[in-house]
Image 1 (tube, rainbow, N blue to C red):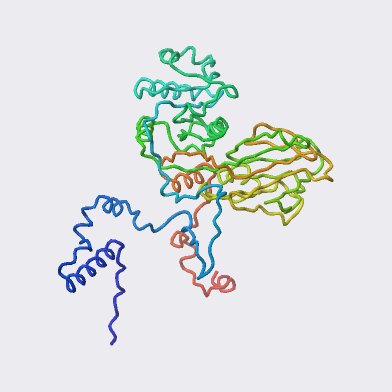
Image 2 (tube, rainbow, N blue to C red):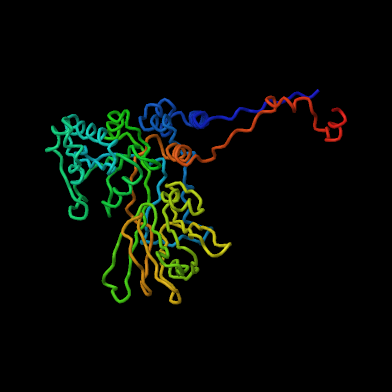
Amino acid sequence: MDMVREKPRRRSVSEMLDWRWTARNKGNAASDDTCTDVPFLEDLDKDPEMRRRKRSGTWPRTRSLNAPSPVQQFGPCGRMMKNSAMVMTIQDPASQRLTWYKPPLTVLVIKKVRDSSVLPPFVQLATWLIEEKRMVVFVEASVLEDPALATDPRFQGVRDRLQTFRDGTDDLQDRIDFIVCLGGDGTLLYASLLFQKSVPPVMAFHLGSLGFLTPFEFDNFREQVTNVLEGNAALTLRSRLECIIKRKGEESKEAKLLVLNEVVVDRGPSPYLSNIDLFIQGKHVTSVQGDGLIVSTPTGSTAYAVAAGASMIHPSVPAIMITPICPHSLSFRPIVVPAGVELKISVSPDSRNTSWVSFDGRNRQELFHGDSLQVTTSTYPVPSICAADQITDWFDSLAECLHWNVRKKQKHLDELSDLTHSSSNDTLDSLDRDS
């Protein structure tokens, strides 16, 4: 009788490392008793960096959202050509952690407009940041013009200590260290609009309608804000699109905007189909005939794009999504292109009408014949602070906000009393005879 061999247990990484070092040290001791170049396991355990890496599980790195960095050498002769015009560096998402070079002193609080339910949390947060954290709090000037705040006795104590600004007139680029959003996804989009270059870290609290981009709950805001101010937080670097409109005959005048969700080109009020030419890296790819075209970031893939039939992409994936709006073609499906490619969109010369373009639902303007819109990945992402981590936050948002893959579960066979006494060989005829 053959004995059944037990399947060998798979050794962990720590056990393999300990075994390797033990074997090396025994071999060195047998060949040369005076060898001191190879450290022993006890010496490795005394190294704080080695203990930290073994404890955190980051050494050796076993998984990542992105693929491993590709090699730069192909065979004995092939090499990757060096390119200094790099658009952006793709990092391992697990290494995207928030740190402060110096303690943050100024914070911008963005509140959802025309929503009275956000006023008590806003007053509570602003008072706590000023009195407890000794921070300089910036708010939009229109917030203080709310009549409901004028009757709040607690707010009167901090009203004069708030710093105000007006959108379009005051520059906040080098004055804000930290951003807190109170409301829905629109507050985060507004924060992206205010900072057209480098964006401070954004912490978004869910006090709005959908809340796909706002992972924090306001109940324990003191503990959560304190953790962020101490540098204990993960980041999601949400890429943005750099959009430039070039008018015919006005090459020197260019309107430039950075968008977080998407740029939309549509037919506007015209009853005719839009006819838009799409170029990628200067090459004409296709003409879009339909209601329009959506060019979105991975963050925007769960916004207008998914409503138009596109797939959902994790915000850490470096990509640009191109989605047609009601195309007059059964084979025109959404596509994903690499981040950093340059897209050019223009009205076709034989189009019956002009087109209209909007940026994150704002700044809507008309595109005439001869005008063009250039879109590429911006080098200035939005550092969105995670409540847990990149994976947990995103899938929680899919489940709670979009009810992704929510269905009634199939019953177990034991719960189906009418099937427990039947077999796979039963037929309808035999069941009829039995009855």
